[in-house]
Image 1 (cartoon, helix red, strand yellow):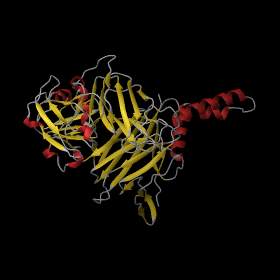
Image 2: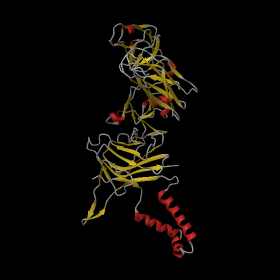
Image 3: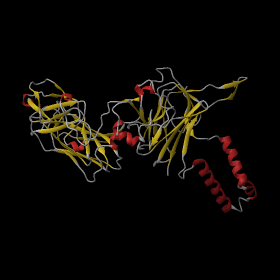
Length: 509
């Protein structure tokens, strides 16, 4: 029977009566109360009663900005039951319960619970966990409604917990040999040898320390027609972040042509809009007016943002006519499908590319670096080219680049690197020697580790871990905060987590 639930921390009637008695003695209120003639001293009694209530309210309810804490216990019904926990055993003596330790056993990969905060405007949420056992990893997720995705932070990672990290802000950095002064220096001089592990960290965020710098009132504009779904990354260095997308429908296939525009940073979807169909759902090929949508993200933090333009039409019936962002860095992920009516120039960091067209109009010879011919002379055939055989340019942005001049368009260009229409907008995103720590069995193979992780502290046989979330991590849309305590694959390898204490603190300034 799952009995473990959360409650207001330390609400124990007996203990509170003892504390109240001490408080009354300290204030000498007990003697004063005995001397009060209720009939003759109504005003004094009322005022004293209010005074006591205020003291108790501040001491026990703490509505004036203090942190309200919730903790495991068994009887309080004010918050949702934790799903997936098992009760700990009782210690008995002569058939009587001598002691029942408020511990819970987790043997499932995921346990969930909800907390109903006293406040609507939450400034910070803290999660404290005291545990022991055999988990490889523990993370806690939070969301402000059941329609949002969880945002996760790590509480424990067994491989990383013994490493001697240095911290640069929220990010921890470890190196086997002291080759770099800090993470910033490493980001600007990422070694070509050595294996770099990352954990709860997107390596793309290192690009914020390199590549295009902040340029006030700058705009990157792509005025080349693209077909189908595309993904690109934007290096955001100025606030707010504004994205404008224009599209039209070719209307060569029956059905609605809708384009979903989504902006993400890490695991968070920051904005999402849909550009609707133009109203023509037949296949007559009639092109109507351009349609556009603008997404604006206020208080945009510096970093790399992923933008997805998802074609939700039959047969790739959408044409993306224009993309504009108020930032200097923008790189396209593979593939890029060009359908413009004028010759195009594309710059790539890829070492291997493939070119393909499905129509006779797309048959052409692509020029590489204005020196070499890359023929595309058959439809529905993928032509692969190893650019290592060609000498590329080496611009100030770093790395070897190649320029593709595409005369006819109607061409799908794929590769193992990124693509830009202007080399000044390029920033590095590809790190071949990076590996997710979750995929390795030992840190012995790692030369560097970058992690959004603060190691748990071991006290006696127990580990203690604490993380905080701010309102930028979640939006409280309803009455509850939703939590997911997760230990991936815990039940697969027969692990368990003995929870001595799990506290959730909800603070309001």
